[in-house]
Image: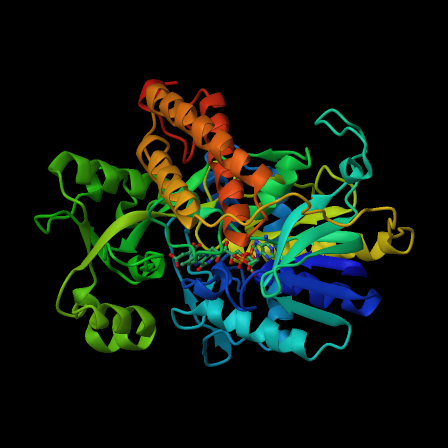
Length: 519
Ligand code: FAD
Ligand code: SIN
């Protein structure tokens, strides 16, 4: 089937949905999403969204905290713009029907690591689910928006599909839409669009242990890389210091940083505090520092988890402020008002991604990116807690304004051919895919994790090259499936993370190598 729209959106998390609501009055909008509409990292966000709301805080302090967390390489103009725009974007979310907790006529604000003030708007400890609910409701009420679930975007359509040779040096690469697999009929459809937005989220599943849902497979980044667009800063993989240690569970359940903001303290295997050895901000230091400290303590004492002690916060405050965490821990037999919570770091967020300018434009014409799949310059070497949801709404807004201004001058490219599966066979052996995915995740966890070295990264690259060749060979022969497409994307992302990590010859933010100590 062939479809034509003004605004094509890939992804139905906070970035895709908030962009859709903005562009909808100006043309036909289609959102493709590869799973159920609500599935994505947005739904699992706990802590909240950072914004300066009252005079007790200031833009300057939030800007400074963001720059410090970013370890000196955030783009200051981007940081200033994002943080100053925050109150307006929050007001829009509230207008769409999102409920943030209030105390009287004020928002109740939490504090998280790296923040010098209480500035995190939240809904209990399940803020993301509330945002996703509010936005989906607003989308369903809009007549111009079609939301199509279980549609897997495979590749961007560019001049390459018109038979032209496209390299990374080609000037003026254009995006005409995407090819997408209908996961229910297994047919591959052609979606032609005047403008396309990638809002495909993160890539946590490149690693073994991640807080991100199974849909986070780096599809947008891999598609842009294949289409010869620019992706950057992928070496900055953020590990959240405190995922619940419950090895059988995938994805790893998050223990929000807001719990440390409320007074919970990190402790070692003997139940003693240790953060004083690493940073004066103790358990509330930025994530890169806390995650490395935990990793070091675990390796030093040979244990596979440490603890977060929230007992002194008290049962009533825990049950009221953190009901999701309280219930989850109880479900696995831990009463957090009486026992310490076993925790370990887990891959949580990708600071890098598709390079975009302040309007959310990628290096490919008519292609925008917003949310976790993009790289705006806000996070630099390390993202400040709760700045991700904020970045997503700010850039969805900016991209929407740009697309609205330009869509009238753009046209649909109808010469694009349909996808051809001629000569392909069904690959009956799922084990080839599942085993390779496991291999990839282990390579990345063991060699390109919190602490890296030249030797480990080279070893990763050698092994990645092998599984890349095997998987490309399978891809050339097989009828395309969602699993195979995700595997290709994950391998591409693993490769890009490793190459970009090897190219960074300094310890900076989340990139830390034992060969670069002192550099
Ligand atoms: P997502 O919400 O991940 O949505 C991606 C969408 O793209 C999904 O709909 C998916 O199905 C779709 N998609 C992907 N690939 C394809 C494809 N090939 N074809 C079609 N559709 C596709 N950040 C904060 O600021 N504050 C927090 O408190 C916070 N807590 C978090 C807690 C957890 C457990 C996690 C995992 C992350 C948290 N983050 C938090 C990070 C934040 O939630 C995410 O960065 C943000 O929600 C990403 O939004 P998004 O719209 O970019 O992507
Ligand atoms: C958390 O709640 O700790 C996660 C916040 C974030 O990822 O920004």
